[in-house]
Length: 473
Ligand code: BGP
Image (cartoon, rainbow, N blue to C red; front, side, top):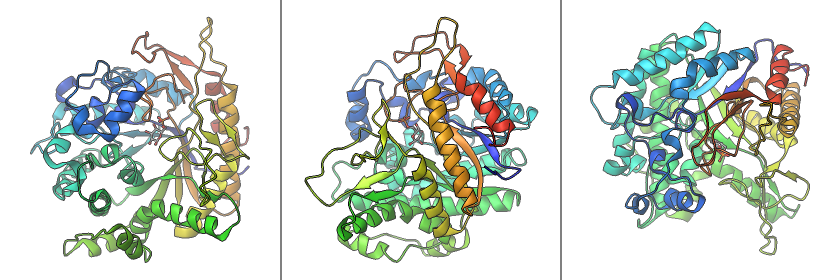
């Protein structure tokens, strides 16, 4: 297995899933701060946010989470012990602009990230920063219905300009929007908007997507102007769609399903709307309103690299008799009989990562970065404070091996940050017990626990992987 010499090994988190301190030092509320923990309540709130806000829920996991806000020194030290070369994290927009449209930033919020970056620098860890990971300021949802309103472009660009200038020289890798294609599937988390009670929700979602695409291009421009060393990436929730059978109808359906995701990257990496978009929009009765300069902006400021999350492949069929579904996340698809299923109902497909990487690289010929991958499982902390997570090691081993194969196939890949390197709150379910980390955090689904950190078996395993640059798997 030959990984490039400077391959960036590390792990990934997101502010809203680990920081906690939801109202500390002037932070404003974010979208996730009104999402309750209980599964049914959470699902309801995700898809009916306006209604949910009228109700009283008792427990909001993001309010305290694993309290990275007060534990970042200890946590980054542990990441350094594993030999991390990169740490993917996100900035909380409402920690910096509490209402999203404030004229001046919150200095205490900016200072917190200065401290986090200083800690990374101490250990030679390169931060990879997501500018917006599901936590748009809640005030922008109330006031504008989020990204459905073009005003968000200006507000987001102002926020990004502030942090790009502040952290110049401290951060060189930036991602504009986490899983940008999620806006079509969870418009509240992806776009800070409620699309119930609108005439054509597809119209609202694609118009909001256009606003994000323009904003992403403007931020790419700014990042390059502020520091020519900056590298800006887009971020896709990826996973190749397989046809259920070799019937041409199924093959065609799989191609169309992938295009729904690639649509975003087509714009961000190539600089223009793909030719198939016109027909898709016509079928959905969507007309994108563009400002005079939008096309030029998109054309001139494409991304430097393509990052993506990969948990599994997807499966599609045109046969209504094929019904068996995986539990899975938002991309819950048909159940692939050739794949194993995790106890959370997500299927695992390591070879699918190699396929996905080859597919994306063939399509765009830009460097890739695997910024999310991993296995969410229930872990058991023994009396000796050990966690024997051989199932996680097996998943990661298989996936890293296939990533190596993709590189050997000729794919250029800059790095790998597995998801939730330290246990954190699940984005989909709001649970703590769905754990991805190399580091166990003592906290349960009701928010109880000492918050103490413990190394799992996978911690030692990943340390060896990094030290051997992927030779010892
Ligand atoms: C991705 C998100 C992450 C993360 C991950 C795992 O979609 O970018 O924020 O949470 O999925 O999903 P879950 O937390 O639901 O297991």
